[in-house]
Image (cartoon, rainbow, N blue to C red):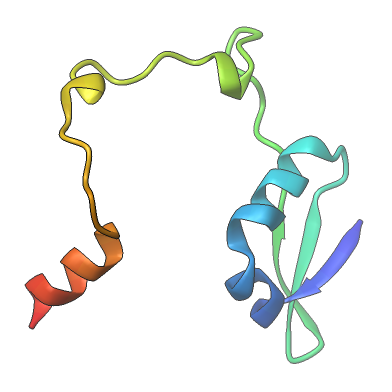
Length: 78
């Protein structure tokens, strides 16, 4: 099992989640050197690969943003 720190998980969450999904043994997350959590691959839904899943109805009709969505959220929270 691969071992990572909370900081590593925080900095590259998507990368570590995808790595856990691909792996068979998952990831062990440490908090100050002590085991805090495990990320394990989810069981596939009826053999459907993640990349082959269908989008939620109406998702394709959402407007495309010309700016970073994080910036919009930040401005909205002010």
